[in-house]
Amino acid sequence: MNQEIQNHLKKTSLFKGLSDDMLNALAQSTTTRKLAAGETLMKKGEEADSLFIINEGWVKIVTVDKKGDELIINKCGPGEIIGEMALLDSGPRSASVIALENSEALELKRDAFQAVIDSHPEVSLSIIRSYSNRLRFSTTYIERAIDWSQKIAEGDYSFIENTGPVSRNMETDDDKATQLLSAFFTMVRKVKEREDVLKQQLEQLTFEIDQARRKQEFEEITSTEFYAKLKEQAKTLRQQRAQE
Image (cartoon, rainbow, N blue to C red; front, side, top):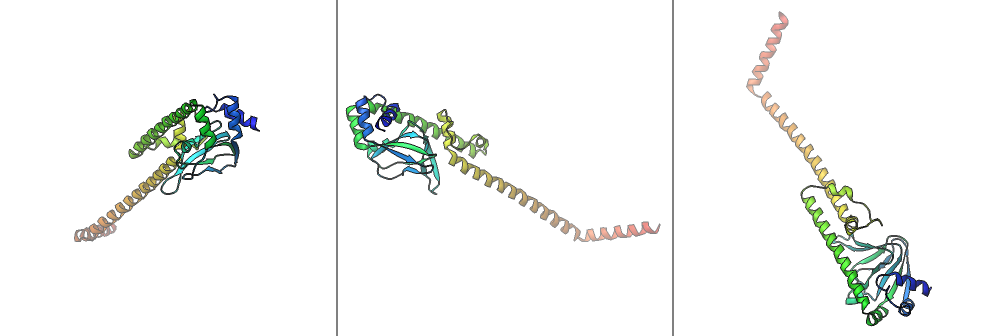
């Protein structure tokens, strides 16, 4: 089992340059976590003393809005490392991680991770690269959200048709941002549905008002003395024609 864990560690971008002795030491300090679909790996706000390496399956990184609804921030799969931020700044978990399917993660505690950094400064560069990639993705994510917000303000909902549920087929940051904003799409769909209902209600109300106005105008015309005389003259004319 130790050799299997060591092989998994060697494949990660963070530890691939370490010696076999160091990888062996890390493997001895690493434990395996099995997760069922929907199970939580870590929770936002809890104290952190370890990082995780996704070995099998896929997980989603989530937070919640003010209403308590889930917002998906990112998605990670085999070989990706999560949770290292809390080890570096000693802060609480910044987000929750939930398994999208049956998954397996390797857990490495803070002391073992710190020993690696102390003896192999190059690992710090790998961490910086990892943060740089995440920052680039966050920029794409924010740009896409702003773009869609502007479209909504203009009444353009066409982009909704190009969205879908979170999946593995996300080749670029743009594709990933599009899929991970699913909660945003759900909100937009609800807004559009309410807008459509309001339009229908307004059209119905306008029709009813027009009908009431026409009825009122008809009643006002038919109640005049002129209309009564005109009606009587028409009646007399019909009688005369009947007698001819």
